[in-house]
Amino acid sequence: MTLEHVSLTPSQSAVLFVLMSQARDVPNPQLRALAPELTKKSRETLNELGLIDSVKGPRNSFVHTLTDRGWAWCARELTEEPPKGAQPPIRALYAVMAGVGRYLTAEDLRLHEVFRAEVFRAEETPHTEQNAASPLEERIRTGYADLAARPGAWVTLSALRAGLDDVDAATLDTALVNLQRAPGVSLIPQEDRALLTDADRAAAVIVGTQACHLFAIEEL
Image 1 (cartoon, rainbow, N blue to C red):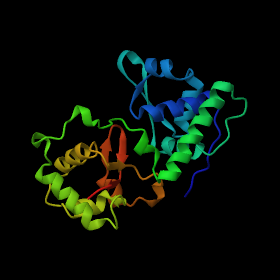
Image 2 (cartoon, rainbow, N blue to C red):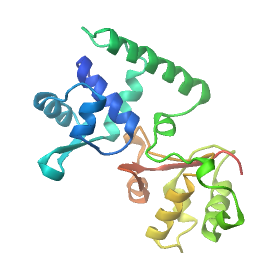
Image 3 (cartoon, rainbow, N blue to C red):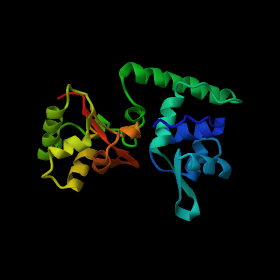
């Protein structure tokens, strides 16, 4: 079932876009430096809507994370008008995010592929013999090639795991998280939660704080 897309205040919308941009747990002091103040009332509203999770961290300060529903809200909001009463800085933010939305559509990408907690940088990890793919990574690539209709097509982790059922789940999780740092490799959540089966949920891999269900390799 598709959940109703809720309208938020300008400040609440900005907070969600900032949490999206960070793609990680963000302590309250850091959030204050990046976004409009998240008041107690706004925090409780966003928590009740299931758009963010807020838990007590060090020194009794809240730490906030964008939920799967929050990611879906941000994706939908890329095509929406700025909130009523938005000041010029928020309107400018929406203009920029609309441009991001047009890019995602043109390139057939999703938000999680642009805003990621850990972005691989080639200059930090030179491609040498020491960084050659492990046997398990090669098996993952082969398993993906057997399942994918074409390079870059999404396959479910539940299907990928089925072909690697002799590999310990934790070991495979680690290999997948490491492999998704490589260029052209993506590991993302299924934004439409209604499409997830119990097997999909059980097969999910946690990247940062996100449960990921889909896997793709651009070049085989």
